[in-house]
Each structure stands twice: as structure tokens, then as C-alpha cells.
Length: 150
Image (tube, rainbow, N blue to C red):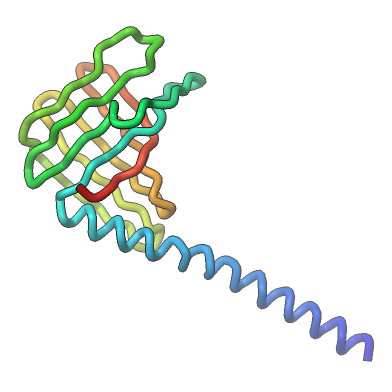
């Protein structure tokens, strides 16, 4: 009888662990689908929350670091870490080479485009966090933020 109870407990534990992994992926599925729909509309805004580089990290002021994507045009600004004492990069132009890759198995969306001599990359993770990398004339800005509907 003790062996039957032990076997039942083991089976129940194994089944519950398998369900937890499915639950996490399913929980992110709705976020991933919402992000796909937003990206496909090409009417969204990236809002940066943190800018970082190696060991340095700073919280960005609300509304001070946003890129709006509307149709084929992008406008806004990106801020550097304050230790660099550089002006923010201002954007207000049509973009080119807009490319989106959906990695459905991992629930990741990758976006890249160019605005004149500026290259922008977004990696949207399953939980909705967005990692931005912007490159211009050999300099980088790396940020963490979110995208939202405009």
C-alpha cells in the first residue's frame, strides 16, 4: 500500500512540473500575440526606461526617451548615459530597410531599420520587454523599455 501511495505522489509531482512550463509559455503567448499585432500595424512607440552600458545603468525620465513609428516615418529621441555628456540623438525622418523577424517558437520579435546614418534594432522578448540597440558613427546606445500603441 505504501508503494502505491509513493508512486501516486511521484506521478502527481511530475505532472504538476510539466504543467508549470506550459503555463509560463501560455502566459507569455497573449503578450507575444499582442506585440506581433502592434508591430504589424507599424503604429507604435518605443519608450525607454533604462539606458545602460557594461556596468553603468540609469533610469530614464518618463517621456524623455521615445521613438514613434508611424507608417514609414520615425521621430523622437534617444538618450545616452549622462556620464558621456553627449546630446541625445534626435530622429525625425523616413526610415529604410525596415525588417521584422518573428521567432514563434521562442516568442521573440526582432526589428531593424535605418534612419540616415543611424541603425536601430529592437528585440522584443516574450514578457514584452524591449532591448534597443542604436548605432551611429561607431557609437552605441543600449536601452531597455517597452512598446505601446499610439
